[in-house]
Image (tube, rainbow, N blue to C red; front, side, top):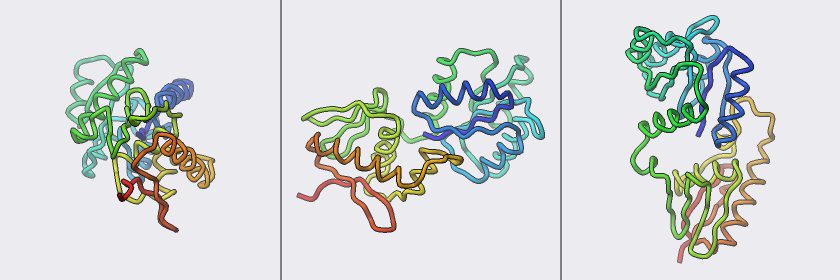
Length: 227
């Protein structure tokens, strides 16, 4: 799941990015409102966290601009302002939730989970995904079959989750890179093949009746094995 974090305080931004990545989110960080708006206009996100008081353009204005453009991305407003009128303005401008600084990281994560759940279908919101004889538990990052189970590493989990949410659909290496490694990653695209190899070995060990198929110059898809 990919998030945009717009926070101009560098130390707080870095701390939040670390927390979010440890919880299996991919995060792009923006440090002012104009940059945040550019990120949101150029990329698809599962959610955005916008600080109100930012240089060049405040978070409320960013929110108003993306809503005016028709974006329904879930937005959490993050600010030091605690006045009721400020909360009302944020919510009336299209925010899904509002969190006042200082806050506990557990509360932030819970609010992110809540706002992103409300934006997806009931199937997507389910914590367990199924295809063939394979189950992915999104709460514990466990890939299992009747034979065995594996707790997946961060990138492995995000890749198989993306494929299980989009079964039989071809996903290009560029889409994996953009969705999982993020907009400003320094990783090379061949890292996708490396993780595909890891996942294939795990599916084989699970005696899965699904497989990751490669399409030359197109990408990869997760499909049930024809019997």
